[in-house]
Amino acid sequence: MNIKEGIEKRFSVRAFKDEAPSMDIIKKILKTANSAPSGGNIQPWKVYVLNNESKNKLTKKTLHNFDNGVQEEIEYNIYPEKLADEYKKRRYECGADMYSALSIEKDDLDSRFKQIRENYKFFGAPLGMIITIDRSFGNNGWGHVGMFLENLWLSAIHYDLGCCLQESWSIYPKTVKEITKHPDNEIVWCGVAIGYPDKDNPINKYRTKREEIDSFAKFIE
Ligand SMILES: Cc1cc2nc3c(=O)[nH]c(=O)nc-3n(C[C@H](O)[C@H](O)[C@H](O)COP(=O)(O)O)c2cc1C
Image (tube, rainbow, N blue to C red; front, side):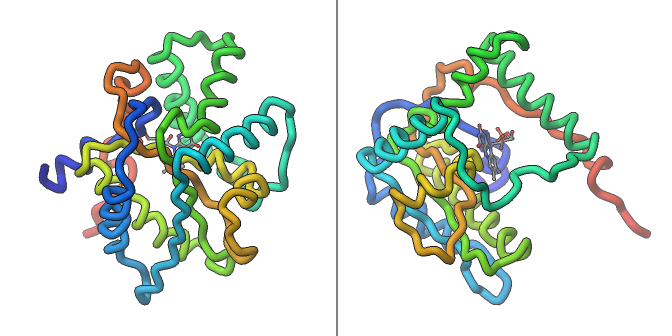
């Protein structure tokens, strides 16, 4: 697969087969992802790979929080408090398309809640990852980690794996830290569900839309 095909083939995988990729493959993916560029080559990414056992421990603790309405102090806002209309529209559409792929009606709050809950099971992926960054970095450093994450995702595709990035883990930073035991100077940015995609699951069959180039690029003369 060439680079263009890999980029265009990527999508968020939210249902997985039971078979786990070997740690050898995971290490190869991380090695390739680590070729990502970063300003001054600072390489500000930190990755905590969870095997089936540690992943299940995290899932159990987090679902207990989720099911009992336990809230933790969040360390960053996933979205700005006031999401401008342009972005709000896309966010709404993205959710609506996903629920429609699952045949979940707008007012079926139980089924919607169950689907959100899947986040904390890493969508059934056999392995999970937690991505942190040193809290001293501002927006610029987070951008560098983004480069690493896209590399990670594309490298996973090279091995027939699929991923879903999950900022949903940032809602439970204290619980995540109980498992990853990362140092205090690191902030939980997101999780990564990773495994072999269950291609037959309807959630993996829909694709998100994109705007036309003119909506984000200006050609200055
Ligand atoms: C940093 C980041 C965090 C994300 N967090 C979540 C998440 O918590 N749960 C989820 O279901 N999808 C999550 N996503 C997936 C996005 O919803 C998805 O990338 C977007 O809708 C575009 O769809 P596509 O990845 O299939 O192209 C996240 C994506 C990114 C880049």
